[in-house]
Image 1 (cartoon, rainbow, N blue to C red):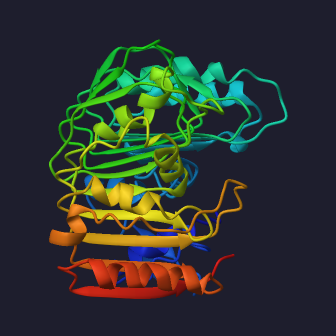
Image 2: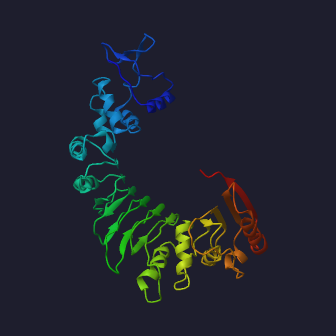
Image 3: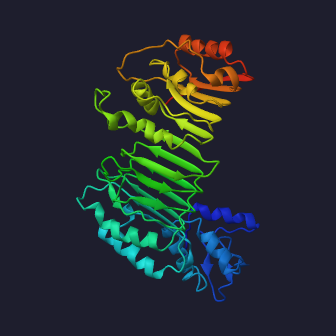
Length: 396
């Protein structure tokens, strides 16, 4: 019986054994094997405790873990105790087969802590809502890690409910069903990309995540977002570009408050990353609604365009009175908006009092004149500056 496992099985070599099973044969006593060298050797892996074997299986995909069931009677049902269920729809004939498999494994799996689902691109017109009921059952199983990635032209619907066990949630191209508030007391990591929140008019959605340590928001569609609680050490990455009206006036209260209301959630965070798309929104709306003050912010990473407006930099720094560490990634932007490279002469409070470290990263081929202007700006105005460093990277 020929057995081939993933290259990941090689990680087991840290036990000091030659664990290559690519050509191993089972023979008589299942604790003995015939290796690819033709010598009879003891199967030391199978002698390990079941808890350790299940931990080993957790490093494999579900497809790989199921393959271990042919190794011996000891391994036959061990994969059902593996804490991770990782699936790709491309491994199934259609969506119905994948959903049936998930339902079947929900009944079979003894323990389940992590669920990863990748919905691959498909030319078929199957409604993505087919996955909604089984995903709801998974959340009710009190799993700790939920990852759903949808690579189709339509978002997959998902009902996310208050859950005491969730530690990590990662969603890509998902449409959340209506909710008013979510209490996720153990959640530490939340990654939301291209997530569509349900419409609530002028009302907010409330998230209560007292242990949240990492939050990433990328191109999400929402107009009201209120985070009630986060940990004191939370790190936030914001890369959003709302579809606002072309011309926003003083009377468009919802439009002009959208960026302010979002960023106000993070006024107490210590580490923040802002993308260039988000900074352009800040610059566009800053005259109608200034940024909130980030009193707790000590480290800021900002992605800024060299060939677009640099006026946004002092605007952001003015909102960070206690900033100590600033990291700038300088990029080129092809946006046809007006080019303004003048930096305001009005010095922000952090430049005068607290900023100590500045790091600047730029492409190898860059606008050196503008970059030099930035360097002079910090050297001349940052009175507490201890170190300014520059580095280059290659763009692909």
